[in-house]
Length: 358
Ligand code: ADE
Image 1 (tube, helix red, strand yellow):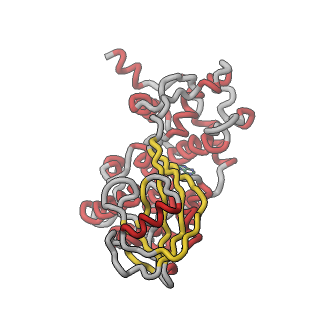
Image 2 (cartoon, rainbow, N blue to C red):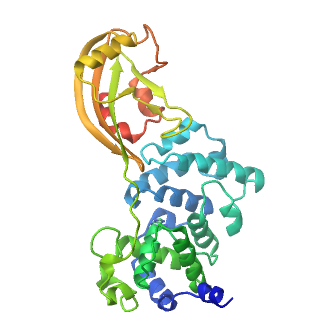
Image 3 (tube, helix red, strand yellow):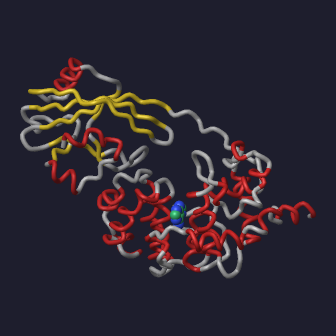
């Protein structure tokens, strides 16, 4: 019993944090489009986009997404290709698939109105404790923490906590500790303050700007000279490397693309044809013939690399002009005009290096 009570208490260094943190946030906050609204839908869109993508990169996507899909119903009813096109370049496409699932849940289970309880928000597809806490506190002013990797860095430094931040148990404990100290009158600014501190002062890469930090005199890691040791983070597994040869097949007016399978990496998106391994020009010609295409001109394209969470693609490429794409179609390619590929078909940014060919 005793230990349970102790567990529930916040680390002593945190009790004094709220006031200076909120004061600092109000004075230094960046003005960002999603900070000017209390609409839970808009906040949700921003938080999902921001999960793996930098603020500056998110801004144009955020504006366009909300112009095209201004509400939950629009998202619930959108065509998949349209959604993927709006997300093209942001990566982690399951985020947008889950958002559509969640929007449909809201239409069915909540009559189209965004749920206004933490538990209701947490029950939606693709929403974990971080996003639920962010929406509950920013949109509805509820006293719920929003703890992501950046907040974990800030909090473990302030408390000189050398627990592994990759562990679910560390995150859970820090969520519990923060929940004790979120002030009644400013949960949103408290959470945003921690996020902002992690973004512009207690930065993820490089030296933190401790002299600008509102927690300067509270921060145990700084006082103990252990900033460079904290946070403790177990290393992720090494990524698998896949070699690929990307082939940009064209005839007079079309390019060959294909749809990726509905499951796995980049599910349901479109791609440029490819074969595994790095092929030389002779092997490319043989491959073309083996699938019934007759090359008339071949140009080597630069090598390129794309890094996903668990895999790296190391690519080489060729632009292959053929006499006629539609002669045979053993691979089930789609033959599409370049302007339609650009405007309609979602092609992941892994292929970016080869898109100028289109
Ligand atoms: N990163 C995650 N959430 C954010 C927010 N609301 N503002 C700025 N950066 C963020």
